[in-house]
Image 1 (cartoon, rainbow, N blue to C red):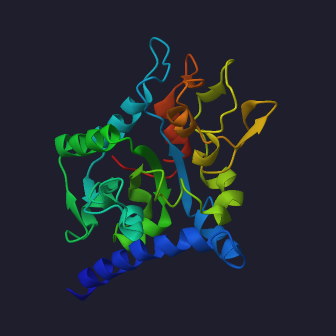
Image 2 (tube, rainbow, N blue to C red):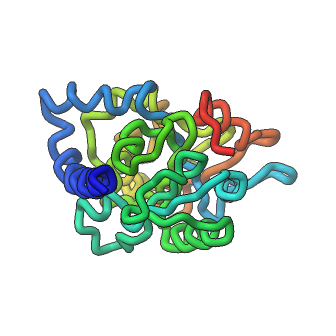
Length: 267
């Protein structure tokens, strides 16, 4: 009972911590303190762009199907009752109860008062509900989840988050972690984000980029080389001049296995 209560209280503290982490992460010495949290050793992840207008070549798996594949083949699925970031922020724009999903053997050890064990069908329904509300999936391997949720061992689970633009600790303005992003959070192989001819440089896309990677130059938007492939800029462009395209022959599932599942077994 003591161990169970410990994880519940730790989860609640973490949810509150995300609120302050985003505000303090841009300042020293908090910037230096944040870097180890986002290091390759503690966190590996990739956003999965799933907008309906993504251009997918014939014969290439769609990004949304990559997420569905994870949910289906995981040995266990546990869905958190709340999203830590939205709970910590008191989010009003998106449901706080659309929590992240832990996948793999270690998900079976998550405290039932923090999250509930789900069937494949329940997991897929939860995912579709999150995607229909415009939340962006991110698959990652995060050390902090081992302690917050009591998911052990660390090499037996990955976390599927559903991130909103207003509260996500990764996607929003936690600028102290920007320097760690290239090591810990990378673009999914085969995903390309491009600005098309016709861009008028309105700047709608600039504030939504989680790593401040978009600038305006000569009247057009320019995407820099730190792009995470999240597709947030494409969704924000009301004129539809930013596109997310998948390379022909891209093996997105294998890309994620190489990236996130290195040394991890969720089956």
